[in-house]
Image (cartoon, rainbow, N blue to C red; front, side):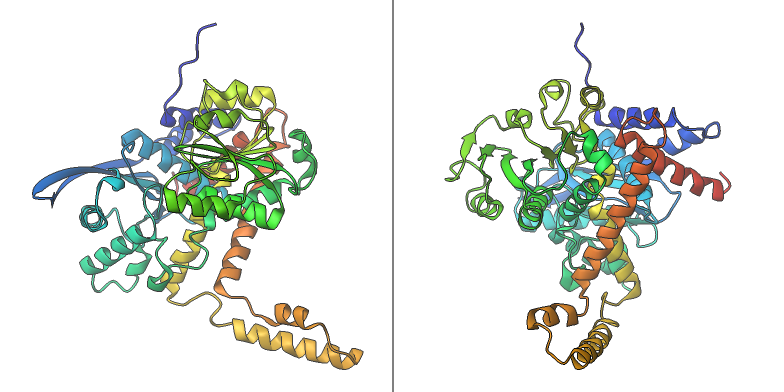
Length: 471
């Protein structure tokens, strides 16, 4: 039997789209309109650094404008290319539609290894990239709103927001040009943790659906489940942290660029995080077995596998050997199309990326709304909630003739802060999206996977938007 040819990331996304469309009844031509990327801009610009001019190549892809603004992160990585950005932009369209956000899909990137440059040099490059995007209307609160992605974070978003404000000094909504900013300049509480928190909420909702849990041949409840995390950056770290601290899962392995750590009794997430911060990798961590070939640990026996790094880490070369009955895609496109087919044929349940990692864009939406409204969430109602709750507690204590426990009163009387409202909104979003996806999954026997169900839900919603626009 000849070896399967591994598709590119973009080819995988298109193949998964076509798999869903084959089960739908769309008007002629509409499926192709939804599939294709509307536009991809390539910008090449020079920045004088270290005594000479260096030329950088950046991209901004707009996949769909059925809703505006379009939304999608900016990544800094040597792997950034035209096709990768188009694939990520397409996923953003379907992701936003699935979780019912009023955005079209976009993505951006700069072909650069940020570790090759000093922070002040990265700032100069970022500010020039911002200028190139702004003058082409590829950065605007009402048209195109980036966010952090691989290789970028709050720091880069702060530079982008500041440079945009400098270029548009009379724009009152300028802070809404980008999300993922530090809290003190228009960011929102909970954005840094959002994607990892969304992974946690996605798993919690999956385990509320016992019919779906049974398909994965797992027992009910997250407590005690053996979890492997591949990629311990922002997303992987927060997913591991919350699953360990709040759901009592056992993190038995963490895979990073320089190898993997294994401890079948469970790794302490915060200890691993501190070690990586201090040393730059997982090697020499004292409380686990170190495996230099980290990718081999993807094939280790576990209950839940969480790929949280790059696309294509599960592919034709290792899919047959994956033992996890449940995989949740915290990264974008970590499973290739061929590997997806292999795993589905084995009965592996996959919670797809367009749902599983939607926490980041969901909380980015909350930040964008906050910036447009110019007011912090919770500011108007928090003390009013506390007052109403105190009235109720006081009356209850009067009626029963005794004091309620102080610990209960402290918790109950506290009004919702911004972080509480953000987490509540994210939890509700992830629950609603999973319920829509699961319902379609079980509606017809031809719809065999959660991924196909997710695409069908998303494509239907984009189709309805285009129909409303007369397209």
